[in-house]
View 1 (cartoon, helix red, strand yellow):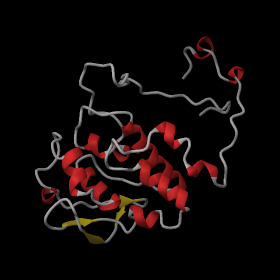
View 2: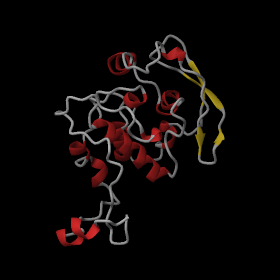
View 3: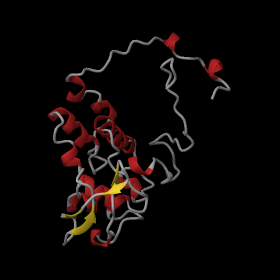
Length: 209
């Protein structure tokens, strides 16, 4: 964002018009920490719901001051399970079990250490996974989703839950998100007070950095 309140959107090389392209979508999109589970497991058939998951990650980080899912690409699915909690058996089978990078069983997910803030690992714990027959031992922080949102208002927490829904088909859409109770409680969003003249024209930004 510039001092003129102009937000520049960049890195749009993988943009596709969803619903019309006949090409397989790239799995190499979205920074790992903000990547939804379907992309973590290499789905090439996804929707704009992937962006809603990312918005949920960014929103919680803005409210809390720390990234929600810090970790490496290799450990990300275990990181999601450790912090967000495991999906139900029904959701795992419906949305993830057949994806290219999905483990044959959630019991195959390796132990992972999640780093937060200071980059120091926190104490380990036992993740009870409802999608498999036995618990998964993971080393994770005491900063789980449940703990980090415990002090939030009911509307804020519900909004984050809907943004970070495992099932992409049930994840809240952008249109519904804008009408959520989250935006009706204090502090209220600032009114949109810009006119078309406030935004630079193409000729005025050509060649700018």
